[in-house]
Length: 106
Length: 117
Image 1 (tube, rainbow over the protein chains, first blue to last red):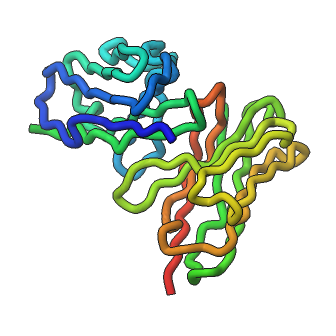
Image 2: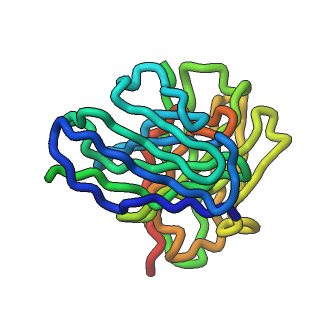
């Protein structure tokens, strides 16, 4: 099974800051990586697929990079609505999620 | 607009059974793979199972293989998950999702399954 490890588990930041979340795969997954945002009490929302392709309607302050085993999600100029938990998900072999990164208000 | 509405979540005793349903609308249901993903209380996401549009391909996570069965009725735009031999560790919110090439682009609101004596 492919394991996905996110870091950090929790990230404290202020509105306007730039934040980066890292996701590492236990083996190469090419670019078969997605990022989701989940707000408290809600279902996840797809942000990015194929490591760097932004979904329609997702603000351009979100960006994804990486390939192989190391990936990043960057949020430029954090907005109040961005405080949430973010999950990476590989879909190279079956599907597995990272454990999540909670972005909280500093 | 795409809508997915889950139902069937309940409190069930260990070893018991439960059937979840997901009603889909707003898209051509038979054209899409569909998936069940779960989230234990306060925990992360786990892909449980997925099924092809024609039902010819079904895949399960090792944690539920042999206990859960995914199925669909394209005439009724409905997805189901039959869960048998339930364990405490199956306690979770179960989400129905529309799957496109391995990712979920639309999610339902979830239904809570609690396994406890």
